[in-house]
Amino acid sequence: MANAPSDDDGHAPGRARAAASRFADRPLANGRTDTWRHPAWVRLAHWLNVIAVVVLIMSGLNILLAHPHLYWGVRSTFADPWVSIPPIPNWLLIPQGRNLAEARNYHFLFAWIFVLNGLAYLTLGLITRRFGRRLVPTSADLKGLGPSIVEHARFHFPTDDHARAYNVIQKLTYLTMILVVLPMMLITGLSMSPGFNAIGGILLDIMGGRQSARTLHFISAALIVGFIAIHVGLVIWTGLFNNMRAMITGWFVIEPPGSTAGPKRRHKPPTEPGDPS
Image (tube, rainbow, N blue to C red):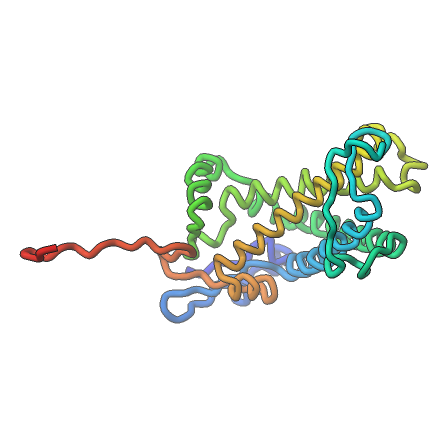
């Protein structure tokens, strides 16, 4: 079944018909279908985010090690921290080894790259209405939340035509990251900036003090790391080559009806009459 390209492709309505053949489904052997999934701006934003987030995490760990303890409130008392961070190997740090000043330079530079890339992604997502179509769950999606939870718990995911759209857990997770976790990381990071405090110090008060902001910044970063770990694991589980190809070329292979990624259900063959078993 051929699909005409949607607004995701970034084409004006007048050019949609001319682009239809280019982005239509392409039949493959054995009942498989090559379908257009990610426009160029989504792929570019994704890989810029990968680079920015990796540098932010590794430089952030270096900054954290300057005082590897977290507190609530205005001051760090050096007694009874909320949590203490264990030693972190040098290969996880940018730059290698303890270097607070250089780590801050990396962190601030890539924080701006991350923010500007995110703003461009949000703007294009709203202009093309991609967010509304692909990320906002429908009432039918929400009614299927229970079965989707069971499906995820069993690591059992469809790779047939159902894989064309995100499932409800994916939609809710992506929206939570975009609308809650990432803004929290940005706001808490800004609230700790002395330069920003000079013009907008109220943020620090809202956060409950510099140490609370630092702790919330660490929590949001930890949630992002958790999201990345699960995301990468599922990318591998559901087809590393296919998912990577989709994020590089834009094209994603749909398997024949009934295909799934995950443990296959095995059925015992029926017993023949007279079979002693």
